Each structure stands twice: as structure tokens, then as C-alpha cells.
Length: 295
Image (tube, rainbow, N blue to C red):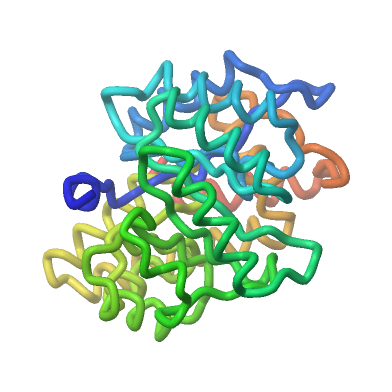
């Protein structure tokens, strides 16, 4: 598992799922998107997560996406598959497929809706860990799941839990996780705090807006590593201004429109996400113009 930590990329795209107007998966556009992002600075991909509308996809669609992504980026950059599900059987099924497709690791939200005990949540992860021969990343997104993971979470002790995708603004918890588990990978999950997560110990980021501007994330990272903190802050401010603009329109439909505008038709999101109106599209185009240097 140590080699996995060493080879983890710093800028990972939380890959969107391009769709046709009928909201079926557009396989050609998906593979074009992966290639486009690699050409523009994405160093890895995280598919079927929140940005990829994973919980709005069927099991077979999620497997299809993992296979399509693998065909483009395998042996070039790592990819991770979100296999989190409402139940353990489905999570194991998706995780086994991800392993067969060549994923670097799988990542899972905890089981949601029912109020499971801490032991039941831990068993869900351990059942997946025992079913596959690759690392597992805990997906910590408490604002969506109602479940928070910290250094005191028992599941973090397992050696095949190789890291955590920390989609939380709580940088203290991120720092504490890093101190408690120095060999585990800390993935920042909020683009808005990318710079500050690096200072707290994150080795990677998995982000929705990485789809749009991976080179901006790379520039923030390089300034940080070069101790140009002022330059890094200026670029983080630029990124956050862009993020604020797209969040106002609905982050996932907005990012899909960004990629359509940039030449990769990505279609609408699955319902019940709404479609963007003409005014929203114009405002998004204006936001893109303000980060044109990094597109």
C-alpha cells in the first residue's frame, strides 16, 4: 500500500458524466472528456461520485463508466471508482468490477437513509475491504450523509483503508487525521479550500471544478510547494470567485455546461436536477472568461 501513497496524483478530477439530451450516458463524449482533461492537466480521475451523479445511475451504468474511463486513462494516470451504495451487496459488486477494470482504489460513502449504528457502518466498509484486493478510500461528506469520520473512527485503523476523501470544511479534522495516520492518503474534497488543505497535510485534491480548470489547481500547488504563498492565495481567490459563480447556478449542471461550452458536449444532469436557463448559461460563460488563462 505504501507505493500507492507515493504515486497518488495531486490534482484529480471528480469526473462528471456526459449525457445526451435524453439523459442517457454519452460514451463517446465521456472518453473525449477524459482525454481532454488529461491534455489540460488532470492527473487522475474519480468517477461515479457526487459530481458524476453516481447515485442517480444504475449499477450497470456505473460499471460502464468505470470501463470507459479505464480504456482511456489506464497505464497513463490513476483512476478511482466511487462504489458507495445504499447496501453492502451492491457496493461489493461495484468494487469487484472496479478492481477488474484496473482502478487504483475504490471509494465509498457510508450507507445512508437508515440510521445505522457505528458498528454497522464499520462492517459495511470491512465487508468491501475483505472482498477486493485493492485499497479503499473512505468518502467523508457529512453534509450529505449525516455521518462524519475522524481520527477516532475505528474503520480508519484498517491497513486496507488507504485514505479518506475529506469533503468537509473542517481542516482541523483533516490535520488530526494526518497526524494519526501518516501513511494514509488525505484527499481534499472541497475545491474552495484546496490551498489551505495542502497546508493542513492533504496530498491530493479530488474536485468538481478540476474538470474545468485543472491547470489552475496545478498552479496553486506549484506556488505552494515553491513557498510563493501570496501567489497561491491570489490563484485560490480567482478559483473561489469562479466557484461562487457556478455554485449560484447549481454546481453540477453548471460544470457540465462549462465543459459543453469548452467543446465537450456534456448534456444535462439527471432529474430531479433542473436544466439551466439562458441567463444562467450567459453568467457561466462570463465566469469562464475570468479564468480564461487557465482553460
